[in-house]
Length: 185
Picture (spheres, rainbow, N blue to C red):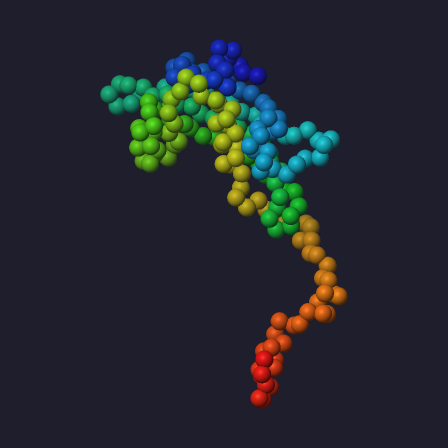
């Protein structure tokens, strides 16, 4: 669902897109992003996966000396269902992306500039897969330790196996024997 038909999100010429101050936008179900799906809890079969809404805007920015450099702003919104690490129940978190990417001519320049700048520096391409870049950013936006602010469900605890514990020696039984005068373990 791109607004400008002359640009293709799967094979985006970033230099032409930035020069035209192009804009693309779209919406896709999360199920279209296979790598993202690996990190999410499965939704029940009768529920549609949440949508990912995104917008990409190209721009040329001036450099000292009069040259210009292509930039891309990527905005995306969605929700992810993950497993809470405290109660092990589903927790829904918002995914909000607002990132700027700076494009340069080669890998060496990208590595040099990426160390010194806050924005991401990528190599300009005539075949950038914007949807793969979007998926990368969605994955990076996932919380490292997803948790509810307050868990409503207690952590499920397995029932103790009373028969097995009665037959097993107590782990401190040998220490008790040492405490007795003349006792041996």
